[in-house]
Length: 190
Image 1 (tube, rainbow, N blue to C red):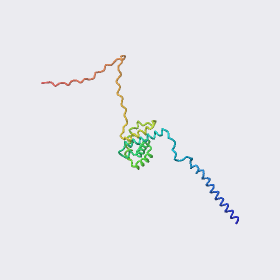
Image 2 (cartoon, one colour):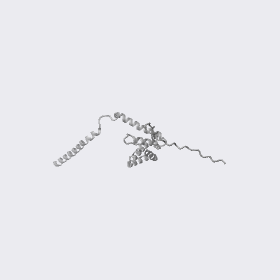
Image 3 (cartoon, one colour):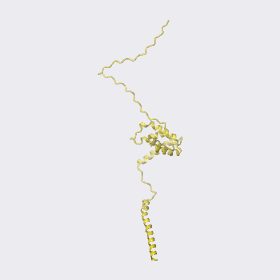
């Protein structure tokens, strides 16, 4: 009988040691999840002015699109964001991702024809899009999203330069006179 008591004591001791070890093993994880002693309702530190300026620019772009496209759902913020993203991805030849975004665009009830018209517009601006210039693609996509009929501005062709005035050191060749219109012959009177 003494043997049974000793076995049960050891089994209880082993069980309590296993439970104690598992509790000790879980404590560091619990402390790591508790985070800092700061209250959760504190405001984060102020964002830098560049981020605030960028966020304001984005908000202005969405407002401009909503105002310009007030006649339909293409001006809704979700349609503007997804549609412009689809057009950019198509320009970059990332068609798989573009089609996944296009599925979301359709799911929000946005007009598919607007994406097509915007991409067609963007193809007219390809010569002006410069990857070295920051936001060049974004600005052109935004322009085309707001007005799919936009056309690139053509620089005025310079007027042909007049021939240089002759100088006294070079002999001037005789230029043939421009032909003059001769009067038509009058029919003879009988």
